[in-house]
Length: 159
Image (cartoon, rainbow, N blue to C red; front, side):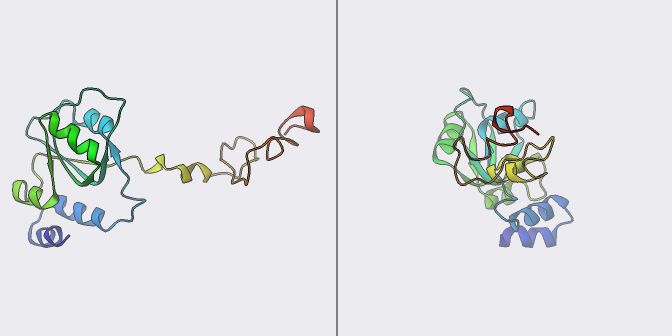
């Protein structure tokens, strides 16, 4: 954090300011990114470019072959780190990034999907309202709970 704040103040680079801002964000606003998504965004980029993620890099079993890439992140899962290194890539810390690219040159700043959290499914129009696909908060998932009256013609009426 101190490296980012000092380089943010010292340099006129917007990159360092963005990194610093993201470091102060809550965990909800620093979502993880999977190796599959990372590989997709780094496809077609130069060999020397470094992916920068202010968050966690997680493994993804859906992708068999991952390309060799340099990745900077706050943390890596054990398997994600192993797979990146086995592919001939590098896992860097933000301190190492500050030495290699002080102004953020040849870097690709990435983020994970913020709305992929399970909690986000409960947000929106109230459940039960027409055209609402919001997930209700229910104590049980049985046939009597939010699946009977108002949901089926055979149980009184259907909205």
